[in-house]
Image (cartoon, rainbow, N blue to C red):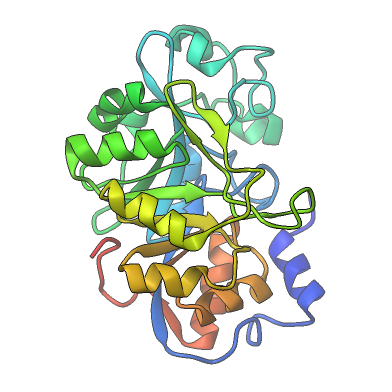
Length: 302
């Protein structure tokens, strides 16, 4: 079995469960990334973006589970992160958006993480079950043309996140549902600072990855389209939190697994934290005096 990444993060930070985060009071939203986390990050968890992973994320105390969705060639909305089947199935070389749903069902979506999960298949979004008082965070991977199908397949009261700003705008304009715009604020050596990576258009083209992040511009883009906030990398420009706060926008971060990163996000007033290690991060939060929304009796979305 792979090393426990949560324990490795604590060891690297020279902290324990009890000292992972500074003592403080408050409430934050805890989101389970892909249900069970990216690939082997949670070695005991089911394979990412499967129905087992969704159940697992909720069982570990997440207020919401995040899943990635694509629309297949025959119009079925499925859970899957990558554009192709190679990494997380035993099917080789199939593109999700160009394949039919029956073709995608021919292979296992879980055998790569152990025979225990060999019967898992790429699931349909319509088959996801969300417990009462919890939420599904649906990341729409494609362009605005897939919005109608995704929304129709999504559980009631889902929250949508999109890296494609045009897709995000389409969701908001046609449904009024909560929508956060995903912006990749990872520092890039190529530009010597934080980027503002995102996507746009029907073909989901890359934008902003070679541009210095401008938090004011980002907030303006979100507000102009009526979006509810941003979902950024856990590393971000220092002035981003205050700009979003002053703009009245919600701020979610991904994918925060290290206590030092989580502490910085909490100090900066983050609204919610997406993590690969839901159970461990919930322990760290609780030890510091921070409750999740469900523990505090609050809904995920205000």
